[in-house]
Amino acid sequence: MKNNDSVFTRIMPFLFGLLFLIGLVAPFAVYPTFLMKILCFGLFACAFNLLLGFAGLLSFGHAAFLGTAGYVCGMLVRDVGVTPEIGLIGGTVAAGLLGWLFGVLAIRRTGIYFAMITLALAQMVYFVVLQVRATGGEDGFQGVPRGNLFGLIDLSNNISMYYLVFAVFCIGFFIIYRTVHSPFGQILKAIRENEPRAISLGYDVNKFKLMAFIISASLAGLAGATKTLVFQLASLTDVHWHTSGEVVLMTLLGGLGTILGPLVGAATVVSLQTELADTVGSWVTVIMGGIFVICVMLFRRGIVGEIQALIQRAGIR
Image 1 (cartoon, rainbow, N blue to C red):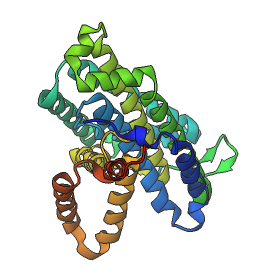
Image 2: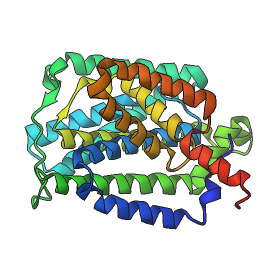
Image 3: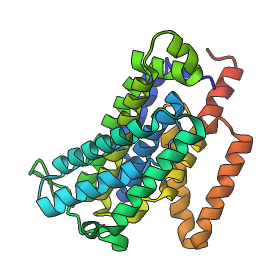
Image 4: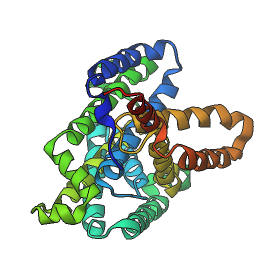
């Protein structure tokens, strides 16, 4: 599928600037915890999109990185007593190392075999988290203090916590944007479009895939560690296969292979879950499944992808 992000090349700086300004004032108009959840899952979806949308690798085990980083961050902050920024770094590094292990084991396979290997490995992580007493098992890892950022800024205040989450998201998003628009990103796109041709040009395809997998896993872990600080707990839901499926939905709904699509998809899914949870209860899952089917059948490019296609059809270059 051709990437349509080039349509917005000229207006990207303006669009990013506008979104940044909206992000700065948003917590004064919308409930900060709701916004923080969107940003955490938005970064998670963007990290997943880097792997699927630009490298063409479908991972069904990305929840393992989100959850592992969350548990590691929680243990470091609550049990070891480190400051929040060290907890975030520790969780991100742990997810990156796990991503390296997953990548080494799975990267030589393609298609459904790659997806199934990542799912199997993620289920092993889920089993370990469930059985190890230190993680809290089915009760989850609770009572994680937000602490003081750099020992100075009290993160128990929701506004302060929001700006930390916003800063983390901006850093992660910038890393993804630069990766996609770098020579490395162009090689990933070449591998996605025609892997045999990339091999014939002399590229070590498995090396590039592994690097992309590690970057994606690390950023997914950064999202998970941040989420643990926000909600002050890490739970089995974070490492469950359902969460891996949810991030696929967010990415496809927003627009696979687009820069802003995963964020839009995450905002849409989180908003629907929040609004529908109190009214329809467990039927939320059925409704989200229906939305996924409609998206696949009618809006294959996703929300952002369809907007880009409309602009192209309108003759804007």
